[in-house]
Length: 174
Ligand code: APR
Picture (spheres, rainbow, N blue to C red):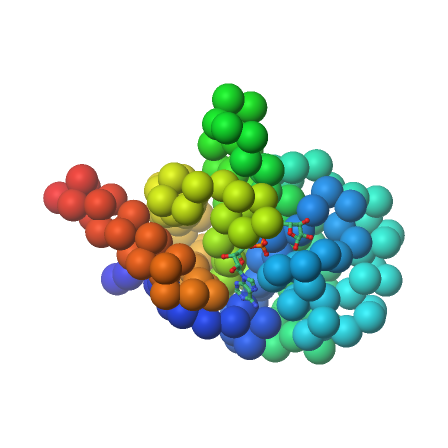
């Protein structure tokens, strides 16, 4: 059965065990999906984030979800695109890997991701989508306890890029 879904939507409304936040290394909030998650969760999210003292790019830290309709928020700072020669691909892959590893540790069976790094951080969308899809599918094989991962795309252009990446991967796998 298909354990990876791609939808158009607002991740702050998704009722999974955990939603992933495309954060920055301070974990003190920002714009984009980070801002939306903090607005929807309420001020207690920032209060808890302050106790975490930041998070390195590619790593992941979890908090409670407060007013959001999920159990946890997993914060992971994606890489800022700097032309592709500063280990951006590997750092982006580690965001997805570490977020799913942490979701398992928290006994989450369903996880939702935004399109990490493809907004303010300017990571090329098609390249990011391929890395995300590859890494999620690989992690799903390693973690059967994760029942379902949902890519929540905020616009149709992003949704099309992830659907394309998944279709290419399925074609490759035959
Ligand atoms: N639900 C789902 N996806 C969303 C939402 C939302 N409510 N709001 C924005 N997005 C999408 C954007 O359209 C983009 O496709 O999330 C994707 C990631 O974009 P950003 O939020 O800009 O994240 P990123 O590119 O990783 O940059 C992170 O931006 O907001 C700051 O504090 C954050 O400094 C960090 C940087």
